[in-house]
Image (cartoon, rainbow, N blue to C red; front, side, top):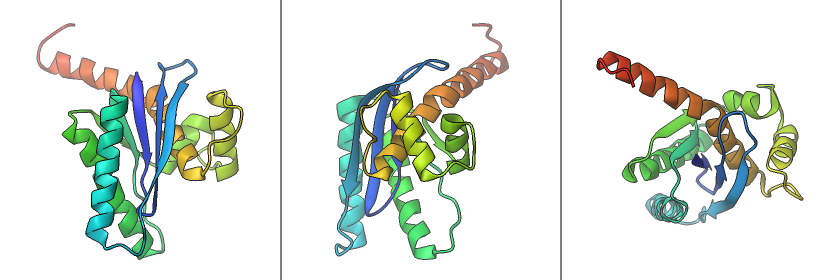
Length: 175
């Protein structure tokens, strides 16, 4: 399974692509950070993000997309930009006909480190170790996107299989 993970952000949007199967180590395909200029108007920033994510989905042809679910923060301006970037990431996956799954930061931390309370340094160290990288992916947005992709391979793959099996049962099928 190839997964494109997105750590949404309006100024810096992390994108990570991994391949793997549940219960086995994942393999790094690529990672990026899409930048937008804070001085640009919002529509131009969102358009740049949309085009960049659409191009990355077309280039890497993932089986699914994993996006960090936006959670409430104290800074409303920051959370609004993150939510807008998240919507663009979900749209890029949906437009390509891919399943898109969102994960909370705690779900990703728990999947990758074993603790939903892990800090950025622990997350980056585990992503580096799990993908057998010679050095940590930089900046942290890229490491977070890779963590999302790993989380989806390990949790989402199983979740998707269970949902598909339940759907077959509801429709009266056995396969």
